[in-house]
Image (cartoon, rainbow, N blue to C red):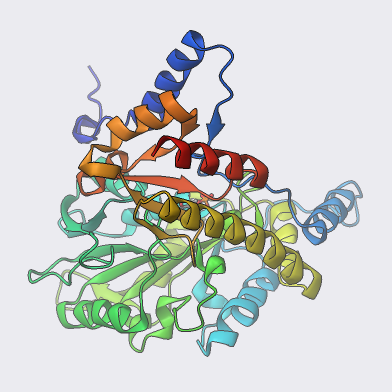
Length: 398
Ligand SMILES: *Cc1c(COP(=O)(O)O)cnc(C)c1O
């Protein structure tokens, strides 16, 4: 008989969102009159920017005509979008990249999951705890060994620089689920660690558009030497509401090299191009036209106003939780608020209490890893009025 990939047996059972759904369904059944407010969702809720909508309509119309129809595009993505990214996202930071360093994809999740294709599974992988589960699961599927980097209040949820040698390290800032950001100094420590140890950093900056503090870095390439040790993942999902449209990009700088196993070096840019040309046929023309519109002056203005809306909701949440006597972090340069449960009770205990007494659904922190125990995540992607109502209810029960 054919054998399955037995690495799948090592995957943690991820019942988190299923568990939440089950508990909410059981509660609704008992209390059909209950008006439940969902503050646990990790998906955006505001519509796409008008500039994006116009660009995608135009792209569809082009495809309706033989003379302007678009079939397969370049596997790396259209040159015009890659150039707009270099000019719009990196030049203002003083980061020098070229279109050849950029790979357009159908969202950051695919590439954060697939990047392991070009690396040996002998590498030891460092992953933060708590964490966005994709990094853990995809590395386990490929047979990588994982060391967890504990993120807690003491280290500002940015992890202590390891004393041992890790080959690959996944970092995500602004962070999902904790809403934490990383300072330039701390990020420099990670880059220096990677350069000293010959390690590779996988930097997920899917939430960089939420950064408002001018001192917080948007890209790891703002740190000197990072082009020699880091891959960066970005996405239009949270930046511009593309969770359903699907478009993102990965930066693999041409100077980024790893060991070829024979005492020599090999550039990851060429390997990733080879991998993408073989297994990926490019993001849709229509999505890429929508993404290009993000870089127009109207597009920039429109997405900024949507993010401002989420950030104001986040501010209300953080302030309300603080007023209710809870310790609430994040939400200033990120859409997520990370708050401590009262009286040291467990994440799930507090989840049940919020659901039962206030009819409010949050995400238990322990669902993102053992270090998340005693915390919970609230997202600012919920409706403003419903958020205010949820905060009133939480204040009443505490
Ligand atoms: C939402 C999110 C992404 C983006 O995923 P897409 O596939 O681009 O929609 C990437 N990383 C993290 C941590 C996220 O929360």
